[in-house]
Length: 103
Image (cartoon, rainbow, N blue to C red; front, side, top):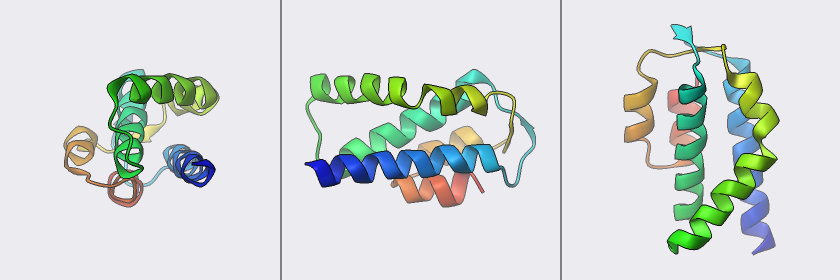
């Protein structure tokens, strides 16, 4: 399980770095935009890792939200794509988010 947790943490850190780095953008990221990216990444990572139990998923989400709070705070106000919400909804993997929605 440590490997899965490490992979999740690495993917989330990468995604947060991509949020901070920027790319093809159109408007300033709101707290809701940043939360949407984070929530989608957590959902995808937990699904990919086999976590199906809603209670366990909620615990992981809370733990990761606490762990990545500084990255999420730095995300607010950065420029993001206008089509961020539909892109996040269509993403089926964390790689889709990182390479399709944030670049």
